[in-house]
Image 1: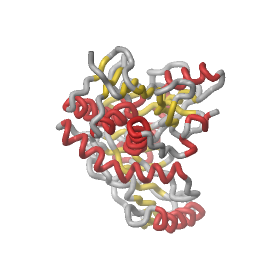
Image 2 (image 1 turned 60 degrees about the horizontal axis):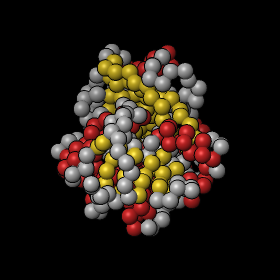
Image 3 (image 1 turned 90 degrees about the horizontal axis):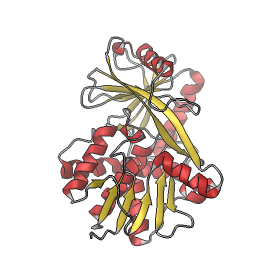
Image 4 (image 1 turned 120 degrees about the vertical axis):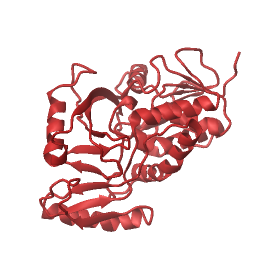
Amino acid sequence: MAIYDLTIRGAGIFGLSVAWAAVTRGARVQIIDPFGPAAGSSGGLVGALAPHAPEHWNPKKAFQLDSLLMAKGFWAEVEAASGLSAGYARNGRLQPIADDHALILARKRGQTARELWQEHAHWEVLPATSTDWEPHSPAGFVIRDTLSALVHPRRACQALVAGLAAQGVALQHNGPDAGKVLWATGIAGLEALSAQHSRSMGGGVKGQAALLDFDARGLPQLYADGIHVIPHNNGTVAIGSTSERDYTSIKETDSQLEDVIAKARAALPVLADAPVLERWAGIRPRARSRAPMLGPWPDRENHFIANGGFKIGFGMAPKIADVMADLMLEGRDEIPEGFRVAANF
């Protein structure tokens, strides 16, 4: 019988990334997911690795900055091991500025970014142009940041699965626990925690997104009118997404997605005739604290949790993988206070 140091339950972005970090440290790992890789929200379309605004600095934002800066090396290692592209690119982001008040705020954030991001990335206010790949800016200026990046969620998970397979780690649909156990099971994990503690530890938020047939590879991602527009390097553009706390269907798309598509086409007329290749809907796990939930599972010895990566899971994954491998393999706990499971009680 095989002996493992870690059992990873859940083959979404958190589970796969922690498995990768553990394996690269020499750990023996098994991954178990009855539904297969990226079966939940990790199998979406958007993949925006976009930073929080550089203001009101806190441990969550500092953690995210570290993770975004780690992403290039993380995905390069995965791609080298797997021979597959994760779709990673750090091409930055453009955002239109609505009015004079927003312009003043944007310039202040540029000053703060110089202090917080230092020379790692830049937040600039630039005059708007008339290029096709730039939404109209009522104030005549746009924000350009060089920290924002992207991945193709499904391809990134496929690359992780292949990279792990190259290290002798196969994904299983079932099996017994062995060694320490990480629960990275999304909504099911939040529900199990809630049941154990007789209070809500989080829940699901539905998101809907679409994939357009339009080649804008190499161009910056856009954020306009609340919509992310993500130019993947396979010649498609993802747009999304909705955030729905109340919903009746998990997988079906509806008029709310059609509104998102219409907003994206209005903000960027060059997309007006781009065919829709796919419409997607899924449920994203949102911890009660809104931050990722990391650390030991209360009252379960040698069981751990990595959950609640609502909207920021792919961006946080490299750093979360590191700190969870530190904790489970080496006993070093560097989890920020606001990310701890106890923060949701």
